[in-house]
Amino acid sequence: MALHHYVSLGKSGLRVSPLCLGAMTFGEEWGWGATPEVSVRILDGYMARGGNFVDTANGYTKGHSEKILGDHIGRHSSKRDRMVIATKFYTNMYGGDPNGGGASRKVIVESCDQSLRRLRTEYIDLYWMHAWDRFTPIEETMRALDDLVSAGKVRYIGFSDTPAWKVAQAQVTALLRGWTPLIALQLEYSLIERTIEGELIPAALELGLGVTPWSPLKSGVLSGKYTRANAAQANPGRGARVSNNFTEQTFKILDVLGRVASEVGSTSARVALSWVQARPGVASTIIGARTPEQLDDNIGALDVQLSVAQAAALEEVSRPKLNFPFEFLKNVGTFGYNGSTIDGQTFEVNPLAPKDDSERF
Image (cartoon, rainbow, N blue to C red; front, top):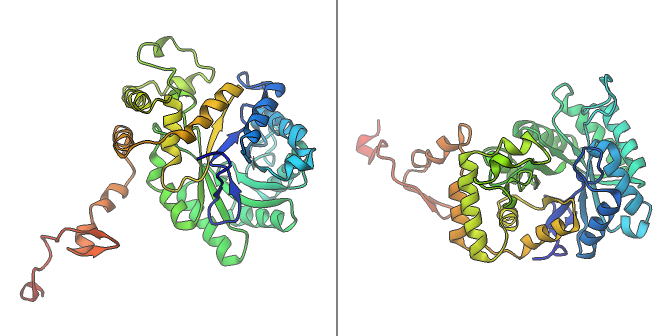
């Protein structure tokens, strides 16, 4: 596979690269990003390989991330029209202003106009709600987004970091009312964070939503640079967001990840990315890079081919405990289907059910 082997994003006609370039590292305002000059080199390297999908947000590096994209891509129509630019609303850029952030109509319209200005473009290809706003009715959010699509300012919409039940409510509401539906979910997903497999991944598959995982390397924890031996002395740039993951369970995952990487002649980072990209429902995995070298290493994940045994080993060591009723429902097929074979799956006979007519009341 290559960056120019495009995939459809959800139930839509939008085609994107299998790896999306995350632009959260564009700008140094947060203390650990890339300069505008390095960011441009990363962008050019990604585009030169056929990459067409870039993801940012209004709040990334205080808006500088969007501006870097706008200065390099937005003002050149020949570049801009070939790229799928995704950005997000929700982050409040104005301290103390209750209407500065969230997902109300006022916030969505004003945030969109500000993003269009920084991105130096007339339209946003994919506009994400960055997180669920529990203070705003979902009907208000979806109608405001539909209006932006009708106005030509936005082409497609999606949700990030939102509960599955709220995603389902939003999607069904939009479909019933003839509003623009969601096409994708942006969710944290990695060998360390797999709990979305309980509700969100099944919801995405059922509702026709493509999944674009963020933090597939868990902020660098799965990159291969951390071990039991050096974790205590490590000083990661993102602090506790990284170090809180230095648990025995994480090191068990890292042990298997390192072994599989050695077997396939690749790196831990590439294997971790390859595993995520191959998961059900995943369309395009978001990769971040602070240097062109990191970008090259991450793109190499598309060349990794895991055997069934290797994928199973990673699956086993990282398997999460999911919320009720996930495990319960896995085990009730015997009672519901009682010895039947359905869609190629055969279920055991229910020992508690009547064996014949003589036992039925």
